[in-house]
Structure formats: structure tokens, C-alpha cells
Length: 260
Image (spheres, rainbow, N blue to C red):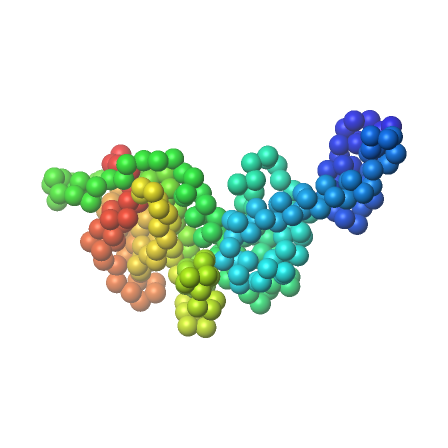
């Protein structure tokens, strides 16, 4: 009988790799090697982890098809075995895996679609917090607005993409709204905001300069400083940055939980 630590390593490795033989020391109640029992358990582990990935990434699964997604999930599981018993949050490295998987090189947007899906899950399970009311700035003197700092809502997340990831995500997240992958009609990059001010996760497009503006605010910049960042980013794509539209829209969807 091998040492316990060696047995455990062999057991874990063989569970995720069907090409490996059952490790020594796995016996049934009759004292005989239990290869059949082990294979059943191995299959159940792969299926459970694959289903966890499919639940987190339904848009990616619809884009790839169920059969391809299952095969891809098996590759991911072997490369990234779970480190926690909580399967709800399994798959944090899936977006990077998609981008590094050579057979998917022709679909560079998949990684960013997966990042939106992961952000959706994180927002759904983020801590609850009362969002900052849109009218909260009405009582502040205009001369003091530029010095304001905002506290991000725990569920808020900004994602930038060189691809139309939000459009593709929106068209493939559920069957009701599925209308094709969206890459044919929207080819420009998109910036995405994910948040959950109350009960439902909200996913929406950010206006020109909005991602840079929000990123600066999330990083602790004052409103005036963040507005300058937003204006610079918008100018780079030959667009105008509208501070009123940006701050008003972000307050409306509950991006902040207070003033610092």
C-alpha cells in the first residue's frame, strides 16, 4: 500500500484524466481492485464540473454548441482542477483558457464574453448595499462637485473589450433573446458595466469614455480627475465625453454606494 499522500495525489490526478490507470490501493468491499467503481466516480466528477461550467457560461456554451463545450470543459478541468468545494465559483480562469486554446483562435471574442458571464455571477452573489440615490448630488454646491470621491457598489464591475463582446453576450445569454452571435452586425469594441443595485443583475453598454471615467472613480480619483480621464479616452476614438450623461446614467443604475 503506497503512503496516504501519494495515494491521494494519484487518486486526484486519475480522477481528472481518463487516460490514466486507476491508482493502486483502490479496493472494493470484497478487497479486490475496484476499477469499475472508480471509473463511474471519475465520470461523475467530470460531468459535475462540466455542468458547473455550463451553468456559469451559458452564452459561451450556446456559441460553441453543447458537444464542443463538453469536450472543451474536459480540457479545462484537467488543466484547472477545482481548489474549493464550492462549485458555484468554479471556472474563474475559463476566459483566459479560451483565449489560449489554439483551436479557438478564430473566435477571439469568446474570452471577453466569458468575462462578462463571470462578472454577472460575481455581481449576483456580491454583498448587498444601498445604492447612492441619483438626487444625492443635488444638495452639493457646484463648486464642490469636482472634488467628490465615490465608493463603488460591491457588485459593480467595468469590462473593456476590443470585440463586440456585450452584443454577443446579450444575443446568446438565453434562448429567448438568441439572434445569432452578433459578431456580424457589431464589429467595434464595447465597454460593459455589470452591477446589481437591488435584486437583478444589470449589464449595459458604457458611453464613450465611460470605462476610463468609471475606472478612475473606482480607483479613488476625484470626479474632476475622472472626468478628464473620460474625456481623454473619448477623444482617442473621436467621440465627445458627456459628464452629465455618464454620471447621471451611472447613478441611475446604482454603480455607487456612497461618497467617500
